[in-house]
Structures are given as structure tokens and as C-alpha cells.
Image (tube, each protein chain N blue to C red):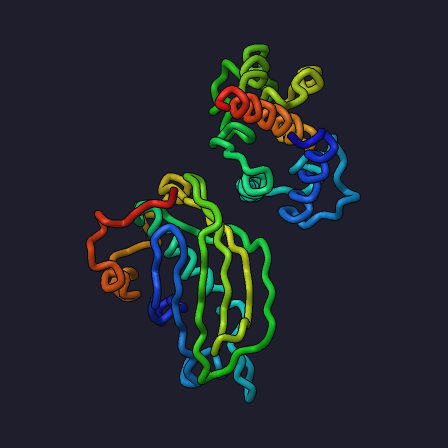
Length: 138
Length: 163
């Protein structure tokens, strides 16, 4: 299994290719949309490239879930994510920094949860799980 | 004029690759303006032809049930200009395919010489995302015109999806 640094380096290379940004612009806490200018279609491109680069399958919604709250007032009220919504975010985005977001849970800042670090954490866990499966099968 | 920038498919391996040709005639309207006195096939139309070849490969992989729209040109390199009288050969291979969309890698050649290379991404668009009719991309006319029914005589039930 690749080290954390190897995963990070590969994620940086993936984002450089996909988003046409300079490697210097990419930091662990850089947000994909706000800092790196990703558009909605870029998320699919990133998933394709990660799948190819790491030799894994990323099921739909596992890394970048879509329409998490679907306008449900239980989860969002007055532009803020409710406590129940925060719990849902923890389930749907287990790799994101929900604790920091919860301090000022404005729904229009949800996109800031998608960071370079979040992708790396997802990949670390995914690759670990794949390795464990391969070992138990052999 | 129809917005079709390939003349005919010459090979079609469902879910894998496709080849198509486009013959460039000096009689085509756009050569009058691009460029006056110096007809050059517009690179944007070359890309469109490549994207149409790839888009139909992608559409076929989903049994033409989904609208396939060009979403992103990931990379493109154009090596030289193309002129009336030349025949463009487009070859695309399917790199990725999933419910949300697909990516293809394509090469355009004339007489075996590589003219352009591109990686193109497509998105599957549901009717409720557009407000348009169910399938506005793959109409029966388009498939007939491109001769897909001749390439695939064994009926649509035999079409395989990518694995």
C-alpha cells in the first residue's frame, strides 16, 4: 500500500491534470471548488482519474455525494445545517472535517468540505480496506 | 445542414472502440469563410467529429437510453491543419464508463498520419435535468443516418455493455 505522502503526491498530480492548476496552488486544506476552481463536471473527471491512478472502483456518491439534504427542512433551517443535518454529513462525508464546519454550519459553505485532504483520507481508508480484503482472500 | 460531422462508421466494437471517417469537400459551406481564399477545416469541427464518434460509442454502451453530452475536453493536441480533399479517420477508445458519464481517448488521422489527439469526457444527462424531451441526442434518424443498423445487424438485443 502506498504511503500517505505517495497518496498525496498522486492526488496532487491528478488535480493538476484535471483542474489545470499549478502544483503550488494545491495544499491539503485547499477546497476543490473555492480554491481550485472545480466545476461540477470536474468531480466526475477526478473520480475517473483516481480510479485509473489507484486501480480502484469508487462507487457513485462514496467520495462526492450529491444532493445530501434534498431541501429537507429537518436538515437545513434558515440557511444553516441543523444538528440532524450535521449527523447526516458525518455519515455521508466521513472523510471531511465536519467538526470545523459545525462551528459555523452555513449550508452555502458545504462545498468547502471537499478538500484535497478529504480525498487523501478517503483513499487511505479505501486502499487499506482493499489490502485487508486481498489479504483475507489469500 | 445536419449537425453531423462524421460520414460513416468503419468499425465498431461495442463498449471498446469505434472508427469513423469524414470526407472533406471543398463544396462544404464553412470552407468559404474558414478561411477566405485559404480553406482550412476548423479545428473545432475536427474535435466535434471526434466527440461524435466517441459520443455514439458511449451512447451505444448504454443502449442509447441516456442522453450523452460533451462535458469536458480533458486534453487536446492538434498537430497540423486539414484541407479539402482529405479524408479524416477518427478512432476512439472507451477509457471509463459509469452511470454518471464516460471518458474516451481519440485520435484523428489522414492517410495514417496523426492530425489530432484528444481525451474527451461525456456526461449522462437525465431528461429532468434539461426540461427537454426524453432522448434528444440519439434519435432513430441519427442512428439510421450513421449506418449503425448496418454495422450491427444482429439487433440491439445483442449489444453488449462495457464491463
